[in-house]
Structure formats: C-alpha cells, structure tokens
Length: 462
Image (cartoon, rainbow, N blue to C red):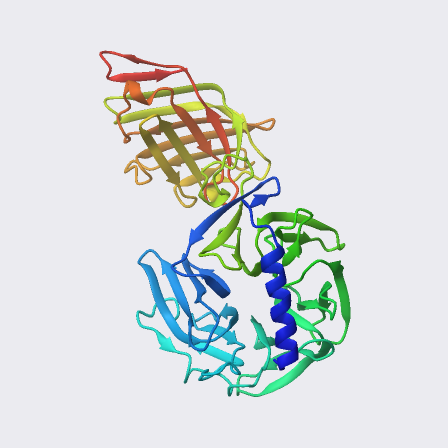
C-alpha cells in the first residue's frame, strides 16, 4: 500500500474502532450470538473446517502477529512472523493461504504478499512467514484479502481511489490484474455459478458491494451507499450476502444481510468494528472478528428461540404429540413410546433416519438416533415404514412402526436399553426427532404425566 493509501485506511479503521459503541451483540430474530475466546487479540482473518478454527492473533507491528488453530486439543500456533494480517482461505488439502500488508514497517522481514501454510489443520509446530511466500514480498502493496475459487486464487490490493485492484494468482506463480480502477477494497466472496463479489469503499469511505461475471467483464451493483463494506460472505441460502464493516444507528458496528434484490437488513449489531468473517456451512454459522477483542463472535441460527444453536439443538421446531404413551420397565431395560404428531409430506425416515430423545430432571434417559438404511422397510405407497433390529444397535431401539395419515404420523417405538429414571427425573420430556441428520430438525414433543408402579420397577406416562 502506498503511504497515503495506508494512512487513509488506517484512519478509517481507527475512526470506526474509536467511534463505534461496542455493546452486547444483538441479533435479528431467529439468530443467536455467542463467543469463542481466543488466546490473544484477533487479527486478520478466520476460517473453520471440521471443528478446527484458524484465526489471526497478536498486535500490529513487524513480526508480531501470528496464526493459531483452536480445536479439541486446545490452541496451537501454526505460523508466526506476520506484520499486519489480512484475510485467509483454506485449500481443500488443508493448506492455508493468507495475506499480510505490512512489509514497509521498520524491521519487517517480509510482507505485502501471499503466504501458504501447509497442513494448517494438523501441524503441531509453527512455520515462519519468511520463506513461505507464494510470491515475492511487495507483490501486493495493499494486500487485503485472498479467496480460493475454482481453478484459481484471487487477491485484493486495496491501494485507494482508482488504484484498487483484484489480482489473479496462477498455479505457476504468475499474476494478472483481473479488475482495476477500484478503491479501498475489502474482502471477496464467490457465488455459485461464477459470480465474484467485491467489497469496495470509495474515496469518501462509502461502501458498495460489486458483482462481476466469471469473465470479470460485466459488473452489477448489489448495494451501494453503505456505511461500511469490509468483508462479504455468502449466507446459507447460497444467494444472500452478509457484509461486515457497517455502523448501526446506535453507533455500534454491524453485520448486514443483502438480498439478491439489494434489500439490506441487519443481522447483528453491538460490535466495536466488524472486520473479517467466515460462513461455516457445516454448522450454518457465521464467524465474525470484532476489532480489538480476544474472541471470535459466532452467529448461528436459533429457529425456536430457545438459546441453543440449531446445529446443537436436537429440536429446532416443536409440535405436540397426541395420545402420547410412554412406558419404561425393568429398570430401563424395556421401553415403549407411541402417539401421533404432525409431519411434512417430505418425511422419509428410510432415507433420513429417526431420533428418540427422552430427557428428565437428572439428564438424558435415552438419546437414540436410528439411521436410514437397509433395516427400514417402506410400503409401496410410501405411507408406512417399519424398522427392525433385534440387536438394538441404535441405542437399544429394536422396532419402529410408522404410519402417515392426513398430515399426521402415528408412531410406535420399542427399545430395550436406556437409563433408569427416578422420581427426580419427573416430569419427563419425550421427543420424536423427525430428521436427526439435518441442521433444522422438527420434533414431536410430549410431556406426559408419569407414575411409578410395581414398587418403582415400572414407569407409565400418559
């Protein structure tokens, strides 16, 4: 970045960080925010795959920023020696691509280029930035973001009004200007079908979200006149774009959703200044970096507003069970659950499986997921299903009988293994999980009245 452009962008970020009123993050209805603590101040970019989160860390300065992986083993530093980290992206083989834009800092040993960190999801020792450049230092004087798209890699060079560009990096290490004449560029995103999305701030720091066709010839504008435009990502529906860097009417930083028709709605506010983001499709969850914090903010779907992310919630929407009957006998070794609940026309347990969840005051009595597959039988008209497994491989479930009728599902489930409930477990909550493999799962839920009989050896609920 030229000295003038870098100073202008630094003033912008400093202004946003100091004037935005950080508060508790508030999300739009149907969403929930929670934080993932990081060892140090979050910097640059963030990505996640298969439960492993990679995020930039440290403070701005020559060689003082680094990248850490957070997973079930804790925090592992995977790369060190960066000056001013920008965005990052992951190759399918686990190689992390990341940009740095601080080569001109006194004492910097590298920077203003693209780096690759191999085995970022598995390595146990840190690689130095020096020696792992894809291209020579100084190649991108204002490197801001990197994006992997089919068969190529692109980098934003946020050089300022009229000088900003998007650069293609070829497999043989050459570069080609893909887009020129832009301004203070933020991040990049890619829509299925070949549309490249570019976040741009003009000389007055007014944001726009620009869309280019696969040949970078035809340009359209998804939205303009934005209060900020730092990083775009594609939402879970594949068409809505989420954008960081804006300012809400209360002065706090925001993330907004921009529909294909350009309509802008707020997804979350309460940040100091939102920078890089990543959408984790596996969990239907947005990861957001808030400048100056030691955490990643995660915004997940919470369809039933119960304070649990849909990805972690066994039931994301609930409907009642009519005629519910539940019997647990012989100290949990025999179980029967039956009744009827509303069901969608697309219901197909033979393909998607079925779940049974029985919860009490002392914890789970039964948490069974019966997978789809060969153990299921479906009637010729697709309205009746049976499941048989004498071994009870799915948490003791040995038999399931289902019948669909007029939008209702009549069910009868038998099992022979579960926890032994006690009076402290009452009342019980019994749920039939209709699509246990999906992110959003409908459940038939019953809270019947239960009584112990035969000296406490049988629990019957109606």
